[in-house]
Length: 193
Image (cartoon, rainbow, N blue to C red; front, side, top):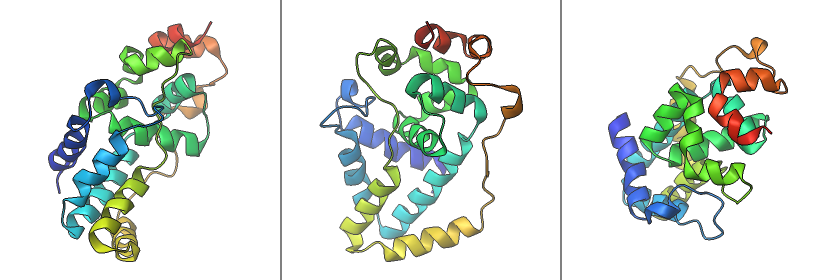
């Protein structure tokens, strides 16, 4: 599975839900996770394994310190788990939004959900359970997930993965508002008083 196919599956799930509900993970009846499970459950088991491995690659590509600081401004989380969830939810926003955010984290200030969050009107980007959605689809197809876990573990063993966010972490203090305003000016304008 190449990246175009991978993102095409995410886009197919997004297209299955109304556009005003595809970008907010805070909805009590969020339709996108179920739509993604349905799309993935239509695949062969080996393709679901490939989707999982690409999911890890895509998530790792966003393991950058500047994006972590954007997540800190938006969601208030500076933990590894919080940033992992943020990257998972960012993938569910689709390829264009994801790619823009990875290249220019301050572009997230343009998202309606982020604007609502800045006004404390609800909304959320992060999504903890993308890997569970993939497992749910596999379980629907195979009736178990042990073979998925084994196949993914084997594939990931051969990959070089970052052990910390890439970037200038030593030069960026998330508590320093002046730095945040300089490096993420649009997000800072939304979230810092």
